[in-house]
Image (tube, rainbow, N blue to C red):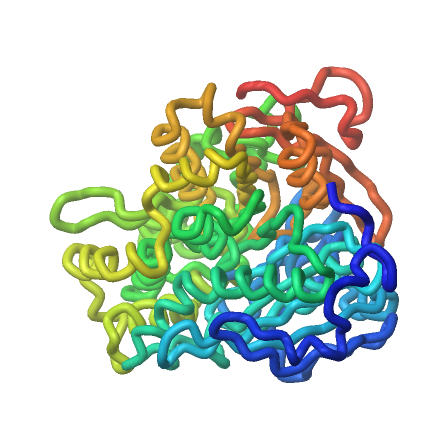
Length: 541
């Protein structure tokens, strides 16, 4: 392990912060280097992204009311610009508190031009005191170019050097990529790699040595970036914490369009937020006890087997039922998109009971990320999502995306695992933006490619989180120290057989529970408070 960093001691051989602009790195210009005093950082006003500091419980505004202990659970903004990326949670935490107490750090800003027509902006934040010798990299949300300053601040507060990137553009959609294939490649995979290479070079120049361990910690688009980094550049990281990934991007966004058309082609099929809440309650009432405990949580929604026909209105439309067109739309969403010619499943559906109301994918128009994805892949700024052909266009998008924005070859992960790299996956069972079933499919693909569960269990594990929406928040226990769990596995060989998570209300912990490696779930032992983790055990359903 590296020695603890302190100003003027362990890393004195390196370049001083104020001289970092003189450092030469390949294809890189260091444009600024500033020593930020304790509590002296203020995020740029035009930066639109960023999750809250570690430990934030609730998501952003607009989420549906959650059922069960802990009260309402807000939803983080899924999929679109500003969606949470750094695995610290979604908007809603005390975003100013972490800056007020943030230790002093050296803020380095750089521009990387790996190829012509590429301009990737990178920031690297290095603690002045008590650097732990490690790098934590944060990703992005939706098509937002915003660097995740809140996540970076949380990392620095824990002793990490942190890094983030704008992925090669400034904006909130894919218009930057039309006619610029190199910028599409930057956004799809290269920018994160260049960010890591630059960060490691900056760290070595400043501290006199590079990081002992390098980690990825991100969700949503950041989850996709994590999958892509692991497959495309397996030597960049020693461990990756990957949540609710928008991967494969082309299939996810095609399904977003599929959902929108199912709800809006026939106006009578549209399901209002109030009716989504009604659906959630009906599923909860029937399925809560099927995991052996009535506690306001469904541990495994796939065991529910809820019959949507029970929701059909018998005497005309009403608040507590669905019309026939609405039931048909709900069934399509639960089943997922299919190839109309072959019947092949293109993307899995959403578990019934997912709190979909208020989510961008169930609105009157598709989430911005969906049309942006295909405008980029098809290089057509005027592309109309109404024309999407789920047979021909799906195949075309896959062909274009599988070498740029998608990670679909789990065989490539063997190179990561060969040097001891670890992956921890997580996904909220009530994610309304990205189906949790796709994360399970991705994980099972790795298990198969890596030689079966007995071997894979030492390389990658998946944790499905009951009652959690997109990336963070919700009404069940979901907060824990991600980097501690990951670093313990990578550095100490302590595999996560369970993760103790907590839920808080008004800043006070009111429930704890183990999160279990898939396919295990948390089962009540039969005695003791159901609000305490010690009274549960991880076991197969």
